[in-house]
Length: 264
Ligand code: NAP
Ligand code: GCO
View 1 (cartoon, rainbow, N blue to C red):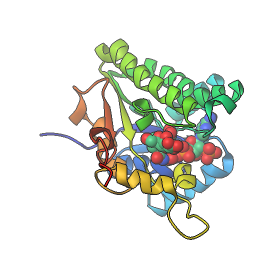
View 2: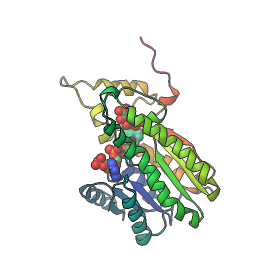
View 3: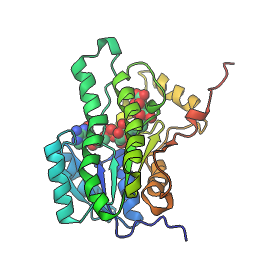
View 4: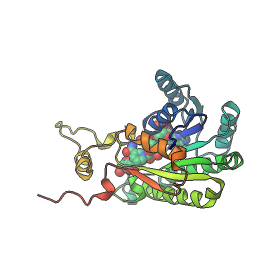
């Protein structure tokens, strides 16, 4: 029988105190997994712990900057000691800086690449050896519309998320023979704090022009919610997807399929 359950599995979701990571971790818990998550600030981890507890989820929270290899190795060792070998990793922690490219400092570009691309490399290489010894595992990288498309002001983010799509394919290529499946999820425009500036009401109470633009560009005619990502994440974490490898599953309400509305 097809099995979407995660009973007995241990999942690490990075940057999962709120937003997309939090929703994915709660979905995993609902499917039976034990949850570990991290965040960069202690106050975020505390807030996350309280939010999981409120849902009756016994998640373990850790403070860790995923761009720092020594901290990540310590994190993985702690989780293995507290819960056991990590079966499912979601590289979710991310940042964005919306700055026109010619005004962006090289240091700002590097910061985005560091969190959105280098960190998934660091966390993945820290969990893969135990996954191999354990007979397999699942890695899910949170990609983006910007893994496929560009737009003004997001050069670093698009470069990182495009790179993350290729890191996904490469992990699948390099470790598929060890029963490790590495796939991506490419969320469309999702209503979280990261995208709040793009949805702010104008002084006259009208919608932000970008908000209206995205709704028109999305066949589903709405922003996504973090909950929209729960089913796809459980699928890619479960044995139902054991022959799916190196794929990016776009959960975008149809944006990438759509040429856009013709002007009236
Ligand atoms: P988010 O605002 O991108 O935050 C994710 C979490 O990662 C935050 O708690 C953040 O902490 C944390 N974080 C940042 N740098 C970190 C580091 N170095 N080490 C550990 N944790 C760190 O939340 P989101 O909108 O839910 O996005 C989650 C993921 O989905 C990101 O990778 C994002 O790029 C991707 N995504 C989002 C959308 C969308 O429309 N929202 C669409 C496509 C893809 P701080 O709050 O302190 O920064
Ligand atoms: C932006 C947005 C996007 C989304 C998302 C799209 O400024 O265009 O923040 O990049 O967050 O990643 O999939």
